[in-house]
Amino acid sequence: MKYRAVAVLFAVSSFVGAMSVTAAEQRPMGFFVTSVGMGNGADLGGLEGADAHCMKLAAAAGAGDRDWRAYLSTEEEGKRGISARERIGSGPWYNARGILIATNPTDLHLYNKTITLETALDESGNRIKGRGDKPNEHDILTGSMDDGTAYFPDEADHTCNNWTSSDQGSAQVGHHDRHGGGNPSWSSAHPSRGCSQEGLAKTGGAGKFYCFAAD
Image (cartoon, rainbow, N blue to C red; front, side):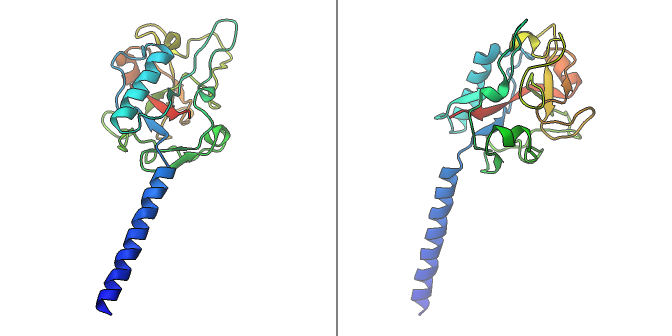
C-alpha cells in the first residue's frame, strides 16, 4: 500500500506538472514594459527603431519568435498619423508571468483595470519603478490618447517628432502604475517636459515604452 500510494502521488504530480507546462505554452508573453530605454531620450529611431528594441529585449528573454511592436502613435500634419492601438494586433496579451492583460483592443482600452504596478512588468517579469520609488520611472512613452489613438485636438507635438527627437518637442506618456497627477491612465496621463533623457526624467520617466506581440 505504501508503494502504491507513492506511485499515485508521483502520477498526480507528473500530471499537474504537465498541465502547468501546457498552460504556460497557452499563455506566451505578449506584453511587457521595456526594462531599459534606448538611452537617447525620446529619439527611438522612429517606430522602426522602437520595434527593433522590443524585439531585442523579447529575444533576450526567450520570446523572440513573435512579431513585437512598440505601443507608440505618430502624427502627421493635416492628416491622421498611425495609432498605437492599430499596431499591436488583436490579442489576447499576457505578461511575463502569464497574467492576462487584455483579451482584445477594446478590453485593453475601454475596460482595462489589469495594467498596474504589479502587472506592467518588464520582459523578464520584473517590476518597473513607480511613484514612491527612487527614481520614479512610471512615465511610459505612448504619444497616444486614452483610446490608443493619436488624434489630439491641438497642434502640439505629442510624439517628439515621431520618436526622432531628443531635444525639441514633447511626448505624451502614460502611468503604468496608475498613480500621479492629472489623468492616471496607463496610456495617456500627461505630456513630458521635453524629449531629452533629462526632460523625460523631470516628470518621472526614463524613456521606457510598452511592447506588444502583434501575432
